[in-house]
Amino acid sequence: MTDNLALWNAVETTPPSQTKPITGKSYQGTSPKPHYLIHKATETFGPCGIGWGFTIEDERIEEGAGGERMHIARVKVWFKWAGERGEVEHIGGTQFSGTRRNGNPFTDEDAPKKSVTDALVKALSMIGFAGDIFMGRYDDSKYVNDLRDEERGAPKPAADDPKPISAAQQKRGLDEIERELLDCESIAAVEKCAAAWRHIIKRDGWSRDYIAVAGDKFSARKAALTKSEDADVFPGDMPSTLNASHQRPLDA
Image 1 (spheres, rainbow, N blue to C red):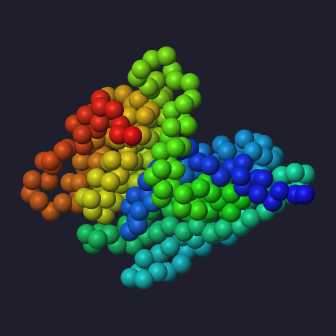
Image 2 (spheres, helix red, strand yellow):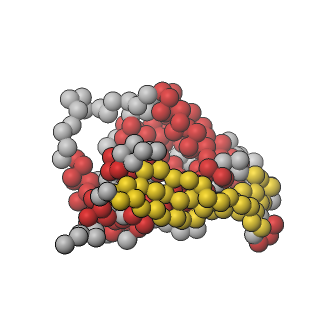
Image 3 (cartoon, rainbow, N blue to C red):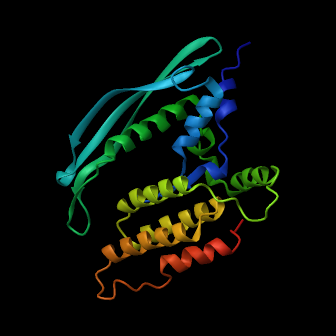
């Protein structure tokens, strides 16, 4: 008898370390890291382009309310499983241009890439990847804590402190911070984004210099959003906040 859920069951569990909070949106939630899903698909099917892959079937710009424009991408994912070839499609969308709350117009040059990534993640979710997130299991704190306990049960490095990731990886992290901050339209959104990155920075053992640069980016975004004449001074300014977080253990 064929087990129709064999593939789903093999890929549905998402390690908490490979997730990130949804920021810059009107809703809250958890999202799988896209490159983790690519890694998982490669582990499951084989190298991208051989055991699995995707094609961009369609891209377009659509007009939205208030003069904003949306970039839409339709992506087809193909894969080989149990001697057969499968295909799934999904659509992703990102605001390409519009007006921010402060009245300034903007154009997001990364919108096409974000739309394709969004569609790719959604297509992989139809196969079962990160199924626990999309089925709402991550809303159950006990489920997430159990997954964290499983991760902690893995062999630990000899050193107590995390081994820092490479400078190139930290630089890519700074670029990701910059992109996420563009979607933060309030001080509260910036602080929520900062809280998520404090965990990532602590986990990956960033150097003091990169922590300081990250803090400057958060402070600059706050300064851009505030109308106060004292825009350069904020309680809990990000550089000290990030450094303090880097030195104390994370909450379970």
